[in-house]
Image: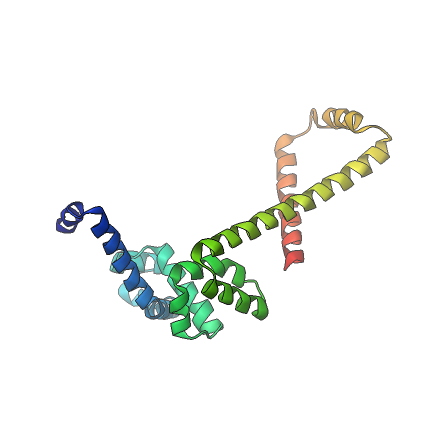
Length: 205
């Protein structure tokens, strides 16, 4: 309660400074924290403290969210252990930027990984965020394009088979689905969509 009351008495600038100072502490210790947490998780040392799950251990013992702990662990495992990037270089990039590029690096080859690290080092945070946003937009549009191609191929096949217009085909399909088991159709569609999306994702990789 004392800390809460103290925070209430802070001016806005003092609050901003306090947040920045706490963040600096995380940045300074993210490698050490990541390494220790990674070792604890990998060797299941949390069992010795009476916890069955790593999540429960970090939340109860250190009041650290399992989400943040997981990010610290994966950051250390990827950038330090796997990629063998120098600690000072990782710290200079910063925790936030590392989280921004991490999803792209996990499935990339070594050349692409180096390019992402370079981008994170050189680009201002806003530019990096905008760049990533644009890439995600392009990926989404590519997925839509593949679906459009699939739809057109299906429609051409069906129109040719029934030898009718698209409007007439829609009518015939409505007749077909009128008394169909919609729950069963939903299951089939869901499974085939999963297979389609997995296939397109594998093609990208």
